[in-house]
Picture 1 (cartoon, rainbow, N blue to C red):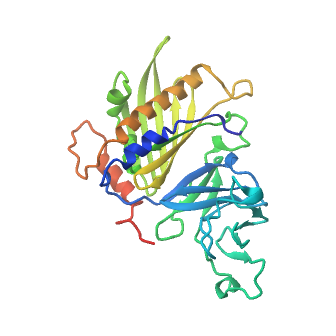
Picture 2 (tube, rainbow, N blue to C red):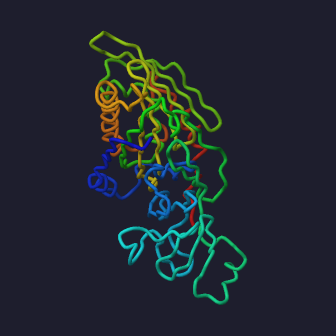
Picture 3 (cartoon, rainbow, N blue to C red):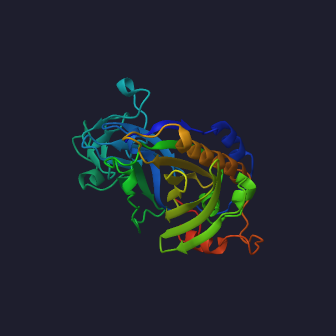
Length: 354
């Protein structure tokens, strides 16, 4: 199931103006750590490499000839060349991948996905750290599941403290659910501000124009997970149909949202920090096949279009609002304090310094 109907609603120039037209942070929180999506699996072929920027770092991602996705810091440990940009026959793309290694375009040094230098083509005597097999470039844990490539980020390079969830409906071999339809947005705020929407039922009426405020059925906070359930009432030509929006979050970056009532829809709503106040939202929708084919048009696409429209409305708020540590809340607001306490475990006390 490769992504179809891919649309990138980036509006990147407008985003850049909003993000840079200020002198102090609107959200004075450190960048969160956890598992984050960096690409869809279909975006990285065997033997291909790409430069990517996340976590306020320049990175390079490559898929080895054995098919494994790897992510390391972008700069060669030898003389600092960027591994994400090739020359000569690789000009216009990233550096070459040979076997399990990426090849530096400057002097041909080869590095594996663990950040070790595995070959220096002209060296007679290897540098001691290379000879000892030490890691000389920072590497990152990678999980490839749900048709997504996920990276573990922690500013202090701490090993993963939890694992990302497997979503059966998103498995390539699942023939019941159609191909994913993916959308991407750039958002000019800290990821916590975006995540708080999940416990803010009241905004549906005022931001998205719903007839009423959804009923909150559940708001549960686990160790690394969060589970929410909203009951909705949807106006249709056949009258009002009750539906549900069920949200399962794992860490700050991964969410699975299930919409039911009219047309069952599953959304992988993944957020990844580019910088502390620049998040990239990668949304992948899935719906059940009809007669063995991915649904196109009709009520299914109308539901996706409506959700995307709501995202565009939310972004108008997120790109411009400021963060209050102690907001003035009323009894009709959601459990913001509980959410922030849960989310706070993924935010370091202060930005780490390399």
